[in-house]
Length: 88
Image 1 (cartoon, rainbow, N blue to C red):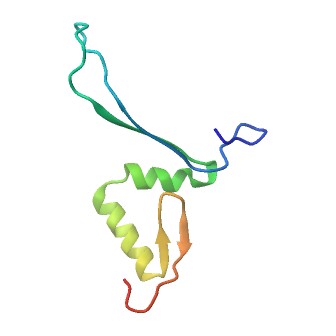
Image 2: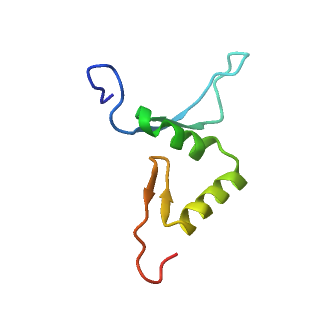
């Protein structure tokens, strides 16, 4: 991990992989599952939480509000949007 001297993460980090869990009876697993692990800096935590756990309607409404007010919302934060002519 990219940490500073206090152990805080400075940049967003991701791991995308596949895992297989053993069944309770000990037989080899047949189904693989996708596993995504994301680690965010403390100042991006709230935006990542909204991005990944908010319900669909709330996320769409929040993104619409941002778009109307010339902002952009992502899992990294909320920023002033620079839009090119003809782009939504």
